[in-house]
Length: 274
Image (cartoon, rainbow, N blue to C red; front, side, top):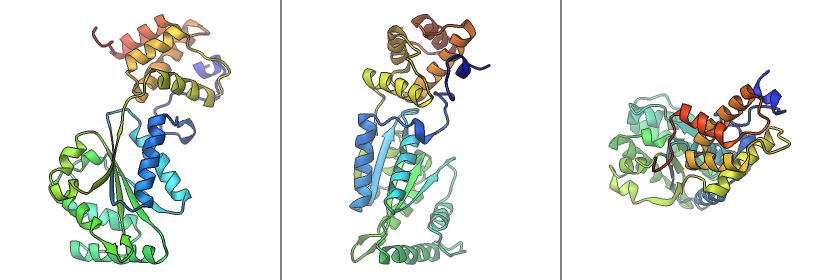
């Protein structure tokens, strides 16, 4: 028996996996979604969402993708997994994501094919957006130049392609490698850690989704979770998951401050000023 049975949960409430049903729409997440969606609807061209590790950028990118698709916008998501990609790889990937029928190593031929594909979408009245997660891994000037070139593709009615980049704060430094591109940022959102009240609501939300019928953390424990996590959702998940496991091993029906202190020590977390 795992802790989910002990605490009468339908599933693990603090998994690290991105799961739409656990999405917590904090005020700042809601605001960012509205601004990013607006950037696509009004064809701004280039928008950014910046946040530190664990603040929920990937979760937000999936949420936005679903919303765009629901509105019949041609939206697709590219996740960058390493920094050694070339500008040619990037262009070929964009062409593939747009289902462009081109098999070439020539950049001009690829861009021409992408342009004609975008015109097809435009003639059907469809907006097109490419979301790029982990965009801080795009670290080469020539890739920035290619993004700028793609943003130059326009019809009589406006831009043919929009980009929304999700990444760590250093992403802006790489965008500045091509100053004309950096100047084209039309919407910029910063995802900060949750405040204390939002942290409590986040924990309660995830427990409720997992089928919890009562709050498993007492007030002192909740306060400690916020203090140790500094409001970073990924860290909150780690603390809460470990605390529930520890509580199960100790057969504690309610998680108290002592358990939080112990698991945070095991996780190597320290309080500010300690």
